[in-house]
Image (tube, rainbow, N blue to C red; front, side, top):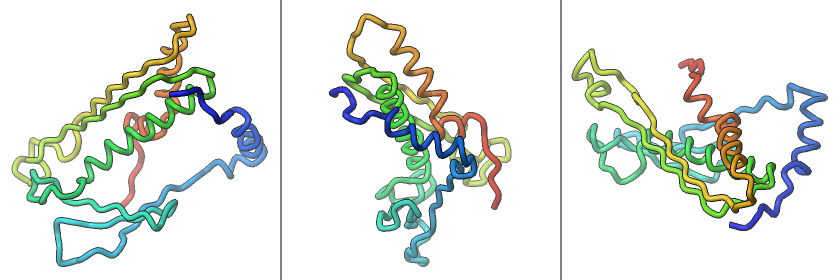
Length: 173
């Protein structure tokens, strides 16, 4: 993977200046909406994102609760969001630090006991009980090995989805 062709510091400088001047402009909203799928099908749904309304995401119940397994379940989308955020953050931090990535491989695995969501036991929690995220990087050797470690530490520090999952967030329904 060649060095980044994008100068992130240059790209982000005016953005940071604008947020310094007007902190309210730094507050964003990410919105997903139901996208009108067949209501007679209890196993599937379609979602659109305000950021890209023409992109429709199909999802469905996991096969472990009766789904058909033909589309990603919501747990798949959750780990995909974590992975996408981590990889993008690693790439951006590497570019900002001037570190050339040679390879990146991330695997995110969430674990849940489906007996909880199937109301089979009050002792079994409903929801994911853990997420294991493995990151493997290969960076171009510049003789400064500590930079790769700093890259990973900074990427974890600035990854929005990772920190949301780790710290929790107030969700209203």
